Length: 397
Image (tube, rainbow, N blue to C red; front, side):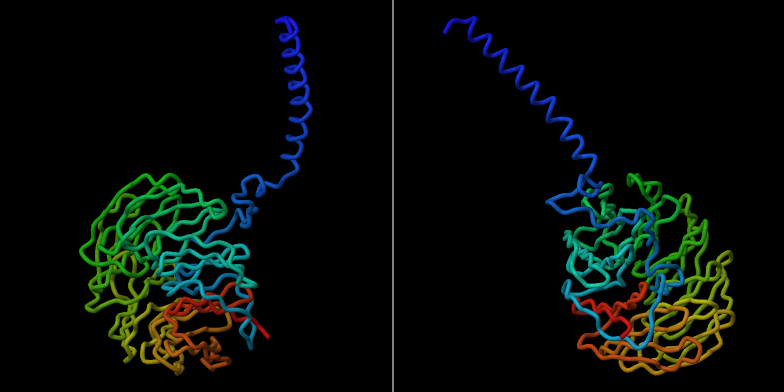
């Protein structure tokens, strides 16, 4: 075969390849146009499951009142709909968005469950355990980890892509996400502010005590509680310390707020209301019972779980007692509050619902595991997370 013949055959082969490509490419392009976005970005063959672009869970326990409820539609009586053991222990109330709940465990896992069935949709493992809840904005998650990892992360919910991964030191208080800024609180007393898009550090402030429980943001200030019983007021724009309030006792719970006044509870049993501008105490009452969790604010009232098994409702205006109900067991978890009910859980495994106006116990069940975190009320379910890592979902009969 001479050289000219070989060259002609090569030209014919190239022409055939080009013709075939011109036929295939339009078909491939048409197929891509027909695919849903989730299929294009799916990894390991899994379609994008989270689709609520407007999802927003940016404060620990849903709001600064710490009610741990979002869009509540619950009815009594309830029965156990499902349970799922997701880790060794759960140290914070789950977050919720779309058709899912997001559970963080002390053994380094974020587990995403279908809210109706309890089916595990995703499980992601990190190098440090979790003490705080996941924040959700759109299709992104924000969270921080304990020792030995000690980082803050921003990841995609669907694809695991990381937008932020930054060392901040071990943290057990959930971040705060406000006005494009991510406020972080590590256990050694360091407070940081990062740009929520790229993780650039805006400022950093060191306090003189440990931070274990959730602060409050009242624009334009941060109010940070410390384990030793101090409240620090910081300028959110630069981290400057503008004042402090010494409470005179240990604080084992989150701050809460009605949008202006702030509330806290000391381990000794004192519940305190203070004014945010001057940090002056408005009132202080002694419950006569130790308290190992923060007060929950809702519609002009505070709800407090006392460690020795009492649920107390106070008027937020002056701290006067409105009613008091007995719980069965030690209570270290704050209640979950809706417009009609107050939900509680104890270390003895009792879960119960009380009438919000009278304090009458309307419903209860017993599970075989202790409870240390507030129940989550999301739409028509109430979710309890146990010390042994099991999520219990209750639904109307």
